[in-house]
Image 1: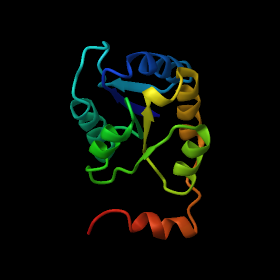
Image 2: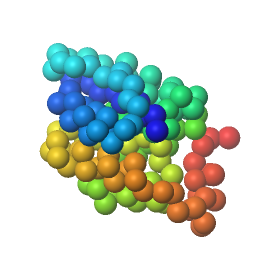
Image 3: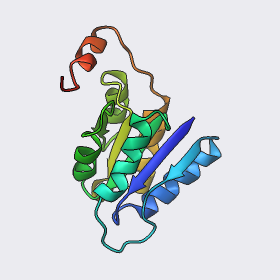
Length: 143
C-alpha cells in the first residue's frame, strides 16, 4: 500500500514516528513534510499529498499541522479527497467506516505522538462500511 505524508513545523517528530511504524508494517511512504520546526506554510506540504491521493498515486494520505484544521481544509479542496480531522482513534475509525475518508489529518498540538500513531493505525486498518453511507459519501463532492 502506498501512503503519502505531509506536515508543517508542528509535526516533524509525529511524522518520524508514523513513518517508522508504516515502514515496519511494509507500507511504501512518500514524504512531503518538513523535517524541522522552522516555520513553514502547511499548504505547501498538504497539496502534494492531496495530489497523490486525487491522482491515484497513493492509496491514502496523512497530513499533520498544529490544529489539523488548516491542512485538512487545504487537502479537501482537491477532487476525490475526503480528509477527516482525527484527534482520537475512535474518530479515525468512524471517518473511515462512515465517510470513506482517504486522508487523515492529525492535530499535533492536541495529540501525543503515541496517540497519533494509533490514529493512523486505526485509520489504515478500518474498511469503509458502505451501505447507507455510500449515498451520503456520493453527495460530498460539489457538482
